[in-house]
Length: 392
Ligand SMILES: Cc1cc2nc3c(=O)[nH]c(=O)nc-3n(C[C@H](O)[C@H](O)[C@H](O)COP(=O)(O)OP(=O)(O)OC[C@H]3O[C@@H](n4cnc5c(N)ncnc54)[C@H](O)[C@@H]3O)c2cc1C
Image 1 (cartoon, rainbow, N blue to C red):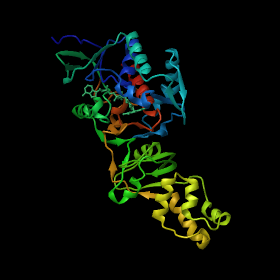
Image 2 (image 1 turned 120 degrees about the vertical axis):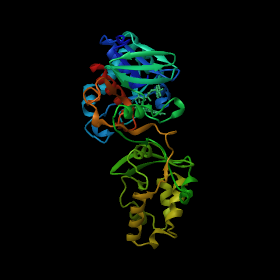
Image 3 (image 1 turned 90 degrees about the vertical axis):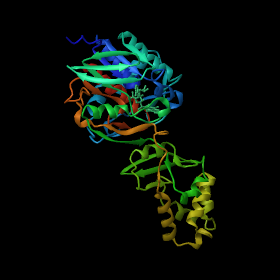
Image 4 (image 1 turned 45 degrees about the horizontal axis):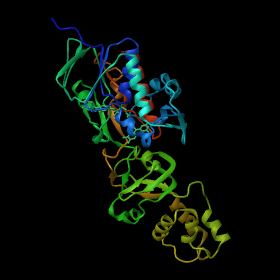
């Protein structure tokens, strides 16, 4: 006769999603085991937000998430909202502030968020096993048996909360996708997102601007973001570029508006300062090195009053939609998140359970739901973890 299960649920991955799911189901009386191969829980939380964890965003809405199924995240996000997480943070006495664009950060340290989740897990008597590799997973007779380190555990429910492969040096792997495929679930092609873009050799002029930042509007794939862009030794970064990277596809251009919100500024400058040059006018509006590089590229010698208004209008248009053709991204090594992942087709949006594989759940970044920069990804981790935790 088969031996009884050792637990009610086994959660693979002690990141934000796994810990939230464990705490919620543990506090609902379930006997929960969390297994993670990393030596400490919540490593991505610890390094997030520059060590202060941008733990949610006041403007969470389903249209700020990318997924092959745009509606999938709606249910979980509405049932466990940013306000719910803020209430939890407040209950634990963690001080926080809004930095910009609704982004909430700890005043102190991201470690407070990890400790809060661990304390919530302790309230639910969750067992946390860290530092051992998962060796094997077998599904038979309605139970999932997991071999890890020198041990084994079994449960009628298994939660995949192992995230995506971004930042492998922190222990990130693509094991979620291997497991999904093993159980017959589809995987939407994973690719790096919220990631710097690289520029080819012929854009070397811009690489000489490494370290220069400017407020821009970045556009690609039908999306646009008004934030800062930063030139790097390899290409482009900064919040506007990280955001647009999630919408960018290989081979496509991105458009940058270097002077957002300004119209007719060059023709107006010609009237006000006829003997000014493009270089000097740009120098008043942009960081000097950027003004120099753009003026060099546009090559409009002489004073403005020597140019027809139509020519100046063309220059304005070019600066409002400067085309870069990235040749790639800095890859999973530098990506804050992975776009794509376990297809939502097979999952219940209410419980995160695979409809055709009873007892198998997937939550967090492992799933094909990716948020904007700014606390949206943690909110998805909390909300999807909470949804599964309610169902286990
Ligand atoms: C540098 C950086 C900064 C970020 N800053 C923010 C931010 O400020 N705000 C925000 O909203 N988002 C931020 N993110 C994104 C955010 O960290 C993720 O979206 C979130 O951590 C996903 O949570 P998760 O629990 O699904 O996965 P993870 O946090 O990645 O947790 C997965 C867990 O699974 C474990 N695991 C993986 N493979 C295996 C395996 N084979 N065996 C056993 N265990 C395994 C890992 O060790 C890990 O503990 C940032 C990401 C990075 C990389």
